[in-house]
Image 1 (cartoon, rainbow, N blue to C red):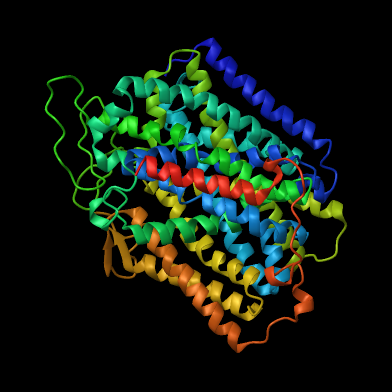
Image 2 (cartoon, rainbow, N blue to C red):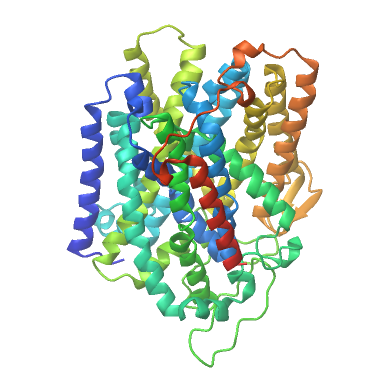
Length: 600
């Protein structure tokens, strides 16, 4: 990739701003509350953009682009079914419990509602998940730098092997994120995430416009790819008749209910942004503001994937033979294609599936599209937007990790009574450890040709069962600590067993499943993820109920403010319509239904 002076200048200016925000934020990170929760003093609109930007990391920008190329516009289900309803639910119903309880983290809420052992189990599994999430962002960033050949010249000048670029990119990104989180804590992360949000929009909106122009607009995409790629609900009656490889029940239950509510309603990575708001009203509106933006994100992150696969598989010029019909998820590549064959980093050879066929490297759909169509100057904007997305994802994971580790593991089990300054120091040191662990996790991602598949697998193990725990805990006062703990353990174990007994078609036994025995095959990796989530949630939900009915619940006096039926209802403040969380939620749901009908 050729970058001009303007491109390097844009990139350097971004890094200066990022580090500058960290330095300025450090002046106000004088206590644990400042470092971990930004002093609960952030305006609603800032929290809302940070809420969406923390999720708008590599798994979104690269992963959803990859899923768009692999599964088509059905990927929009991750937004219009798999995000908006859950974001409305947490804003209207759940934020009063999180914010009102004064809990410093989601696991700490579980301690207040249930007991220590439930908090501990959730804290440990959540900490592992955030490390993996941060590792995904690091992996995607390093792969991007390597693919775009950004550091080829400097490494050649220093006489270093080109194979070291991947490792150098990971370490460089880790160092930048470490500096601004170590200094500014959550406040530094939040204001950087707002900056990163605007950069991502500025970088990818022009890419979509140029790409659509190249393929003849939306009509050109429909002609090139067919309804399986351009209609979100096409073929959902059966798992074998659509790209996702899942039927309508698996989609709505696995993604629309379990995975989406499990992530948006219980994942402290995003909940932490709302808890930093300056009032209860602002905290409730934070996820709703984010939802209003979220419903339009598919148009800048999924469309590049569709454009890339259209340019990879469609005829390159008039008169060329059309692409033959293929099985769900398969694409016949015509050179030169935007999406290359995935190469094994260890052997340098193409990675093959179980049938001996080469796999496309869907993760490169968006970066390669950027490389192909952006001119000098715009390349700097696009590359900066990609870097912003990666750092946003990394920072989100690390800030959530240092809070949970410090309060829910270190303070709870290692040193209970210590000055606030001590926990502030531990939080900063934990940031260093979290970055190092994320670097290690980045290397696991190389086994997947779509990082979104890997992300959803992790969430199926962690978020799916914990959502059942939160749901019962907040809305059924009879739920007990023993029931919650055993239910969580049963849900996670069920996820592991299901993963060990199933395998996506054409995949090899190992990291993607079948390590116990292959008793069932799924049409796609995403279908396997959805059903793992369904089984994990169901096991946790039913086990928690059964054990709770056999054990003694807490007294009502201990549950005030923690359970819906025992919490005073919040009166909606009078004022402009956009200050009313319930009205905002209804508007958002109606708009989401409209988008589903438009792209049905």
